[in-house]
Length: 421
Image 1 (cartoon, rainbow, N blue to C red):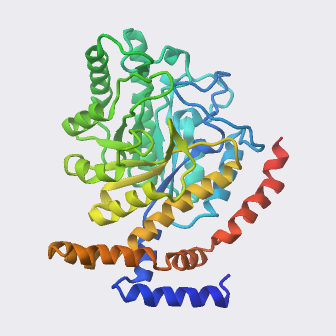
Image 2: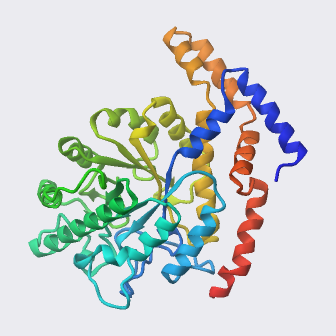
Image 3: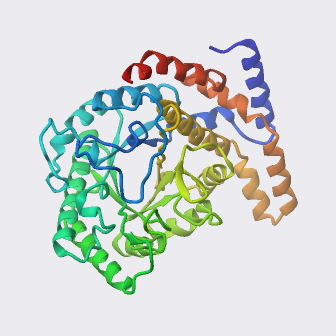
């Protein structure tokens, strides 16, 4: 509920932004309508529901043992409902294949069916929540040596080809049920701790596997395919088969999307700068909004300079409709629902700041070659009270303002999460 102080702060912000040609109400409307695909795997430390007993693998590690981890689909969905209620804006949900509901029966990855995700689809339809999907090519005996789709053994490759084929069919079933395309993302852990002699061989086998997967044509109205590269991982420090350059070339030549993960590049690389370089050549870009810290790529998203640069580039490019925005991080050391809420809100807040830029004035200054006017506008923006606009947005969306977020999260922890331990 707004108080007089918040109302006054917003009216002042409205006038100050209007002075540089920015309509704050239009900015709020634009950012609210932009969907963010929230990742399910923050809620249970990338465990899933296969009940395989296998440890997390594939270069992925989750640290921490905060109480309240989701143990069942029902608990995970309840946690997601709570996190969604703490953040404004349109949302989607991204599922991994290991989050199917298998009814206590063994179903290996090459036997995946849309029926295993009926519970998720029913739940999502009740909430008018679009779903996205990811094949899971880690935490499995046939991925234990670090290779899947590029494996030397054709039987192992065949298993994983069939898994991704089935994951794409699940994705298409989701897209058909929701009446809009579901995005399927493919990431594989394939790589080596030390440099292999035959890099070309691994990449040739990966091309062969991908071509076999995509030979099955599924309706574009139901599925969008994206491919995610990485610079290095735990156990693949020296060589990653599916690098950014590899997937960029494959996507351009096959008309697929490219996934740009903010934590999958060298720390000095700008993912924001890649947007305008990649978009002219691919149908669309899938963004995984993450936060890299030193060698680890999946920290809880906060509104830092990297995130602001990315959000501004998305809006400045004028091609935001050709981007698919998703979150990708996991932290078991803090309240997991709070981690979701912080990340969703940080991504949305950065996008609001981007929509509050005086885009028309900046384009005019640059077209006129007036570098001083461009810098002056940038400096003016930095001093404007975007926080008051964010508080107003949260109030309109009936979610907590920042000052109330922690108390809302802790109330859920005391009532629900603490009981699970």
